[in-house]
Length: 154
Image 1 (cartoon, rainbow, N blue to C red):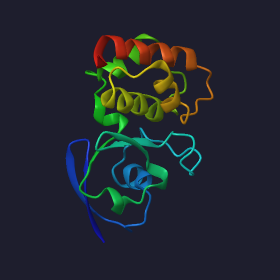
Image 2 (image 1 turned 90 degrees about the vertical axis):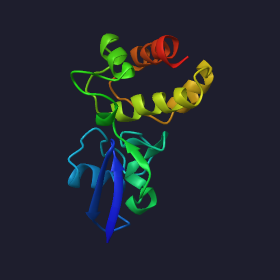
Image 3 (image 1 turned 45 degrees about the vertical axis):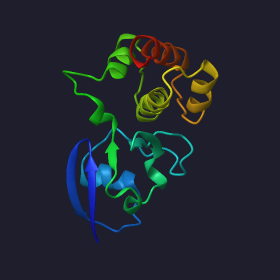
């Protein structure tokens, strides 16, 4: 079945099973490696993408359910030469180790601060609680998110 997607500003039409998880379409058909397969249950956040500005878990989202919506992956925020401000701040704060969880961390933080630039620390912590990182860089990630909120989001 032909599915029309708009990913990172680019329109594509793919002949795929409409029940296929969005994550597989992004990685296997569009070669986007920002979202990762983590738990496969939508619980760890490694597969997070933005759909119409909202952070969703692409591993449990059927591709047909996001047809026609704007989808943004970690690659769609910025480029290596011109990273998005939140990506730049994460680099400057050295808030990255292995990078496996970065789609979840950065896109969840961006979504919550785009929706509520004055989100409280508790609001941010609640939103970030569903994103798991095993590298123990939470302190630096929180610092980067708070810096992004202070410098850019507000």
